[in-house]
Amino acid sequence: MIPVSEAPTGEDALRRQRPFVLYWLARVSTALAHQMITVGVGWQMYALTGSALDLGLVGLAQFVPSVLLLLVAGHVADRRDRRRVLQACAAAEALAALTLCAGSALGMLTPRAIFALVFLIGAARAFQIPTMQALLPSLVPSPLLARAIAANSTASQAATVAGPALGGLVYIAGAAVVYGACAVLFVAAGALIQRVHPRRAQSARLTGGWASMLDGIRFVRRRPIVLGAISLDLFAVLLGGATALLPIYARDILHTGPWGLGLLRSATAVGALGMALWLAHHPLGARAGRKMLGAVAVFGAATIVFGLSRSFALSLAVLVVLGAADVVSVVVRQTLVQLQTPDHMRGRVSAVNAMFFGTSNQLGEFESGVVAAWIGVVPSVVVGGLGTLAVVLLWIRLFPGLAKFDRLESAAVVAEVPPPAAPRRQ
Image (cartoon, rainbow, N blue to C red):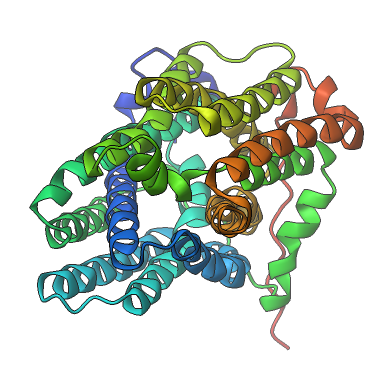
């Protein structure tokens, strides 16, 4: 292992880390497939049912397995070889995509079947998200970790830019073609992960039993700044997220087709990608907490403008701003969590983190669908944006340390807590 003092820190340092490059490519493949499936399922479901509530239920079908399995997934990530866990997730997702492909090609795909297969994908992602996060720190030297986190976010956002637009264009050839391409991407991701060889071996395997699943929650509760950062993201996305309603905006409000839906979904990722690239080379520096709170406020304001817009160009521009603001919160949160967590607990702590940020998107989609069915599409988006602004003001009072937090580097935990020792045999 390269000593910390000798670790490369230049602009091309990450590109010289082969394990990270393979990991990055796998991340792009899975994110690209997830975004394409989201476009395909959203458009196909709305074509089959014409119901905003059913679009929200698609989000719920992904959210439920995340809630049920994330703590188990974190435990598994600390107990098993993380690469093998990721390969199993990719295999399950590929199977679901192939089933969607076959059902669409044969004209046998029903809303209930879509819900079931989306549930399977959500279950696989429940294991995939915390395991990917826990694996990352072992792939690069410690001085490169913050930059690797930003680059990892860049990978996800780059795929999110291309995925929805590509999914919308490919959908012209049929839903089956979209799902078939996704299956290929999932298989490719599994093959890439197989070739990843971490720079540092995984810490001693967890021996505390299933009761240790709650250790991640206890760990986060003892760190108010981390708790404030990840809970802020949860409530902001829960209230301000309107992605489940994009098919309605595309067809009924902005009067466009599948290609327009793809562009709308890509717009937030364009802004996020640009901001992630900027942060990879220009760290937030001082007043990181205030900058994150300000970014979430911009997220809420942009949501309100999007909800009221009737111009396709304005809607795209606002979604770009929304995505750029969101990624500031993502980078601050992820860096705080990784810097403060010892390796033997990264799976469980990443699972808690994923419960906030990973499930907030799906739960937000469900909330948007229910509220839209209740008070209308446009009012639900506007009210959600106003709620996000209210959350920012409330969090300033509940977590004063978050607003006062200065530099991310000051959050690093120098001494890691050793993993629990295995019990002696009597």
